[in-house]
Every structure is written in structure tokens, then in C-alpha cells.
Length: 225
View (tube, rainbow, N blue to C red):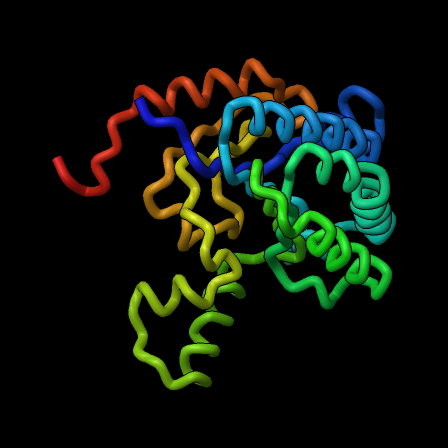
């Protein structure tokens, strides 16, 4: 029975949960942040070394301006209020994606948070921000061309945002939606995928533990028999 080293999560359903329960998509996003805190703690408790959260995609810029503003303010709040707690709990923060589209203030906060937690080893928390897998792969290919190196799986791996991070063993998507939404398309090639009907704010530690236990019982062949 093997425990996962790396869990990736598409935290879907915040907006729909908010409309159903609070009549506000933004309040759903706020409730989802509380779930993030619980799952981080549970990940540490289960001795999982890598957790990747799909926090803001390249496609999320299509949302209404006020919702985008709220999400970015929520990100700032998370960094300002929780980074010391994460640091004390041995969490190392890493950002994947193109953060240059964010404000200078957010960019500085993200760089600072990564630097502050850079020596921690208990859990590597990877936040996918302004992240799109297709852009990531295209960027890797452009770098291969610029560097004039041989094109193969190994060279692409080395030039992705996730360089040095093992591919996810488990992908969880909440929100009763069964798709990948341009998330880690290269890295998820052999991940075990769990689609969950619950919206992200309703997802809890028991749900998480049940998925981990199911993974432990899964025989992974990677194309073999």
C-alpha cells in the first residue's frame, strides 16, 4: 500500500456553492479558502510531501472584473495572514504560472512568501496562479528552441514550471465536473483521478482521507500488466 507523494486539486464549485448558500459567488470563494486551510493541515498530517492547488487559471481573467478583484484580494489576505503559520508548520510555498500579469504588490508578496518559506521541508505547497498547461508546454518548447537542445520528454520536463517536482499521484476535482480544465496536462498523464460531486467548500478531511485510502489500494501499472 503506497501513500501518495503528490496530490493535485482542482478546487471547483466555490461560486456555485456561494450562490446556493449565500446568494454570492464571492462568499463562496471565501468559504473555499477555509477548506484550503483544512486540506493543507490534513496533507501534512498524512505525510504527503507535495500539494498543488489550482488557484487561478489563465482563463479566469474572463470572469467579471469585481469577481477577479475579490479573488486577488483573497490571495493577498491569504499571503498576509497565513504565511507565518505556514512557515511555522514547515510549509514551503512555490508558485507556478505567469505572475507578471498581477499587480506589482501581489508579485512582491508572492516572491517574498516563497523566499520566507524557502528552507521548509515538511510540505511543498504549489499554487497554480495565472496558470495554463498549454501555455506552460508551449513555453517549454520555445525554451528548447532558444537553447538549441534536443526535444524529448526529459528536456520538456526540465523546462516546465514544475521542474524538480514529482508528477501528481492523485488528482482530485470537486464540483461535480469531470474535466481537467487545462491543468497539468503533461504531468497528469498517469495520475489517479478522483472526481467528487461535492462543491469545494463542502469538501472535508474525511473526504480527503477516503480518497487517499482508495489510492493506497490502487494497483498502478503504468502501461504494464
